[in-house]
Amino acid sequence: MPEIQMREAIRQAMDEEMARDGSVFLLGEEVGEYNGAYKVSKGLLDKYGAKRVLDTPITELGFTGLAVGAASVGLRPIVEWMTFNFSLLALDQVVNNAAKMRHMSGGQIKVPIVLRGPNGPAEYLSSQHSQALHSYYAHIPGLKVIAPSTPYDAKGLLKTAIRDDNPVVMAESELAYGWTGEVPEEEYLIPIGKADVKREGSDVSLISFGKPMRMVLEAADQLADIGLDAEVLDLRSLRPLDEEAIYATVRKTNRAVVIDEAWPIASVGSHVGWMISKNCFDDLDAPVELVHSEDVPMPYNHTLELAAQPSVEKIVQAAKRVSYKE
Image (cartoon, one colour):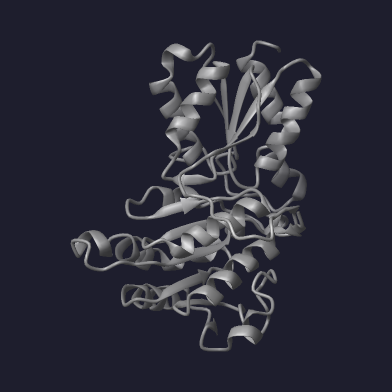
């Protein structure tokens, strides 16, 4: 099975769907002539031309609104936000139009749009460009939200998202675009709403999604060295959540640590922790732990920047607390 980078897996998904369906097109800042800010769309302009790969002005509200309109009349746009931090400028179109059009029209108007780009902290980007904003979108009825952690998941989920008749937000990561992983050459789809057990275990459940999954798996290796067998659940889909998979892993291990690189208040992680506490109360042998970014704007200083975010050490310590191994 070929091993490719995350950016290439996303590109393959878009390329295959654009070849399969002439109504699919890509738009965003620098997606064409520059091949994408992170080279995700490399070569697509040459292959499909300027009518299907559109370089836009720096107007997130404008080109997102254009795409919502295009989706409502039968096209299937893929909007690339250069960063989710800029997506804040487009929130009105996403929340009030894309998410609600199907409901308000009694099902007459579909909005098959994908809104994707890098989310969360990278490095040396300070407070305004290091925000994990996936919970903003997971909060909104009418949207689906996915957050892949591997090239395999990114390609399979994105292909499914492009074919979906509802708006789908895909949270990627600038630091993960260079990560590599095996991706089959034959076509495959991954259903939205299905979590994936990335590592089987029996002593404690580590539950996360997106970029933090790499440190979660490293933490599981370190826990194994001290005799704790951690199960790692990758949510992959934030709306809808795979509640069955979440409860199954907690009932198996009786301990849970949820990891989310967002701020703790009203986050996906805090919601998952509440769900576990409510629905697995009798199964838990310890309170649920949440490992999160500190509740402050992101510092620019790199030492402080790292200290403000989840880490392998923080995950290990949380797992030890719920397992009474301190």
